[in-house]
Length: 350
Image (cartoon, rainbow, N blue to C red; front, top):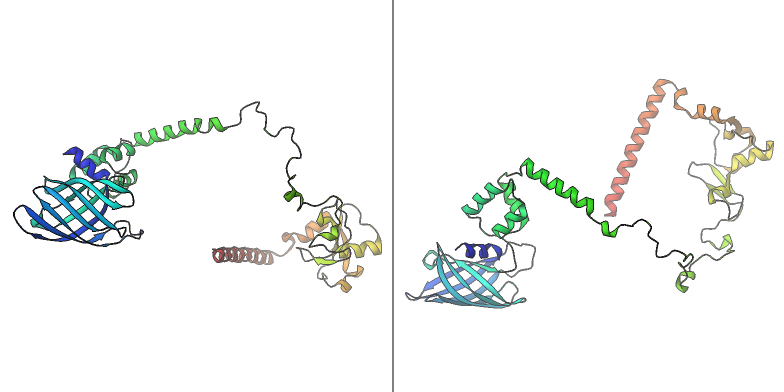
């Protein structure tokens, strides 16, 4: 009986078929399949399963429209196991072909409750008192995979039932799992690591990348004119930088970084009027006189400060305490607004 119970649990509870029976004689039972309930509600399973079966002198055969919308047929021998009539045989008509079958139903005079079970699925339908007793006794110190194997179910089902029963692993078992994990990490991937003295496969093959004709077709050519770039701006062009200062392009020199090909207009105006700016100094607008209008950027609006003087001017600490607090609150509010704006944009991108 124990092997039979294990077989029942190792198989999948594919469906519960509710039928209406008519007992024709003392040794013949005629039954009708009506409907199916599938535990997997995501699958597109047919749940209307009309069909019929015959049970006579322990032998049972039946046919019905299965969950795959095909015709299923089965046959086997039926014996009484406890309160169940259990039929062992074979079933066909599914995409996987003919399969071993174990099906159980309550006796005919109590109304049909049929469970169609196919080998290869691991879904437990009923936890017996013996199963629950075994789980409660061994869960704390026994590997969950061993419990699942013993009961013929999945590891996930063991964890789910243990959670519902509020069972927990013992401290000793948790420590064993940690040590086993550490030992595995110490050796995992060793065969895939670079060993000392390993010679790279591409040693001495400099320049082999990008030699394919398709790659060369999209590469920048040596001596390429800057004007060929799609975003090229000619010398003398104006732009506003990230700090809202007006800049003019002064060079196409490819050896310079793009940012160094542009110079602030107010710096150019100062140098045109007074010459080069001494090292350690910076040309800035006088307080309240900053502008981005080209014609309004004149030497009268500008001054040159040392870096130390510029740091003091831009420092928050030279303002009155009340204004400093307002500026700090403004900064916090601005950061919060920017953070929320990024979150909204991220949600919209989903």
